[in-house]
Image (cartoon, rainbow, N blue to C red; front, top):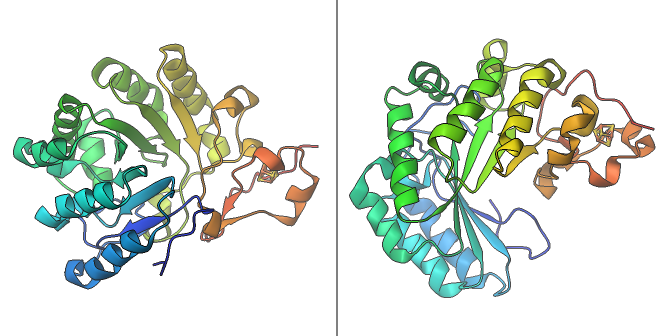
Length: 289
Ligand code: SF4
């Protein structure tokens, strides 16, 4: 956890708790049972109070930040008052927003400059709940998405790409188009090979080159409908050229690295690079000359 925010960093985030209501099979930050909310609270308030006023964005992450309960709203309100021009990017599994009263409390703070990043693992309950490691997660998350939409919040729907869901990417894309067309962004996200992904590698890890066809179909379909789709955490050399325009430089600066051969690659200036934290990389990385 940082001691201060750096205005030049692309990753200034408040780590609010390591606790979570899901147990996702590929979680990069395995949750803890220990209640650490009080322990982290003072440090987070200090980070907000000492942040540069022109800070472009601030993340609110965990674990699951909504487990702070009433203090979650207190935290968001404090950011709003202290840093009125800063975009707030909340990463949540969305389940707490299935409660209309809970969502109303965020709605009363207002949707301006707030973006909620919420994962959807599948188009069906069985797969989503299995990947999330929690029964009822799918229903809660979908209800949460609809409740947030009623308050006009911007939502970034995040689909983490794993061996368990890649084959249904086209179905997931159609599901989003039919049922969640109000989301502002859709992010298809490559795996960070750390945390639970190491433990569950047999189940979840797949080399990105082996996902090429369903990824192309899903990405190009979503783009054709006018939805704003992006690919995060994957480099162009492991993806078909037709979806390169959707690739974003998404990896936080402090955990980003390149291979020595990347110096020969013409795409390096626009490449997101690799997770320095990943214990394994694609076997198909190669410079494009
Ligand atoms: S070779 Fe390196 S710089 Fe080039 S696309 Fe692959 S990861 Fe990016």
